[in-house]
Image 1 (cartoon, rainbow, N blue to C red):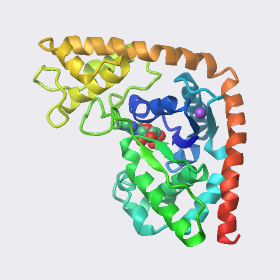
Image 2: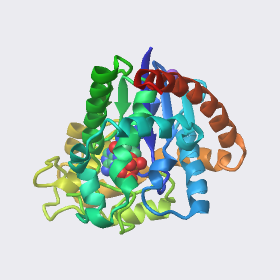
Image 3: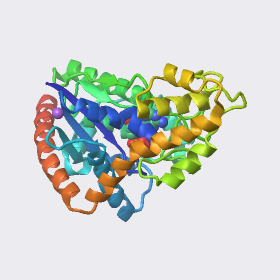
Amino acid sequence: MVRVFSGAQPTGIIHLGNYLGALKQYVDLQNETDCYYCVVNMHALTIPRDPQELKEKTLDVAAIYLAIGLDPKKATLFVQSQVPAHTEAAWLLQCISRVGELSRMVQFKEKSKGSAESAGVGLFTYPILQAADILLYQAEKVPVGEDQRQHIELTRDIAERFNRDYGEVFTLPEILVPKVGAKIMALDEPTKKMSKSAESKWNSIALLDDPKLIEKKLKRAVTDSENQVRYDLETKPGVSNLLTIYSTFSGISIRELERKYEGLGYGQFKKDLIEVTIDYLRPIQERFQEIRHSGYVEEVLKDGAEKANQVANETLSKMRQAMGI
Ligand code: ADP
Ligand code: NA
């Protein structure tokens, strides 16, 4: 069975970009693969966090995994910090990684805002922790959004180097991005990706936003002055982004949507999109409320950690042996 690994940071409520780029794929894959989905809370530490809030958000993300339809009988769900092998493996991999290759990571350049001197060391080295996450599970496929491509390539480079220098230990992972939705753009600034860390609340829609807020956000979403519902990433990034969201939530192809709204303009288009979005998210929100404080989430994570520890420790002992410690 194909092995799959992925994870999301508990740094804010999961938004449509996270969902359409990554989490929806998690669910699609759970029946036919052996999959491991992690809440990567140690990655969240690369930027200062309130400890109590981090704890709560870790459980929030786990509850969202369950609420979107992940089934603990089919997928192993766990929290990164509950599997100590991740940090040890990350250290071993750091010792074969290069400052140069990390310096080329676009995400580091963006998040450190160009001032490497004052950026946290963890922010710099976190792609290696991410490599450890993936490699410990011998993952063949890594379902993520387009923004993670460079990190997955780095993971492969590090794995290849380890295999060459110390003997074949790791499976080389491949990125898996969805055909539609691999890069959802910000609603208020459709030339940038939708992001949890954006300052403006008009940037994204969280899976848990209430219907009123979803309506407000979509009404304010940037379009253009043409008033024609047409998919064109170059000249109509805002409308194209909304079409992508509409299409994935409704199952209607973008082509068909263009035809449906021919001559109707943005008013009707947005009105329907608001309804489609609210309807799609409602059962997820209901399920979330049902389970979040029921004790079920913690139970699932405990079982998940047990299973994850077994798999991760097996790879870790191969690494240790190969490196002579
Ligand atoms: P964020 O980038 O929002 O802080 P994470 O780093 O936790 O979130 O990413 C979780 C997953 O969501 C990753 O697989 C990432 O590639 C994906 N992702 C994040 N933003 C987007 C986006 N705007 N469009 C598509 N996928 C995204
Ligand atoms: Na499975």
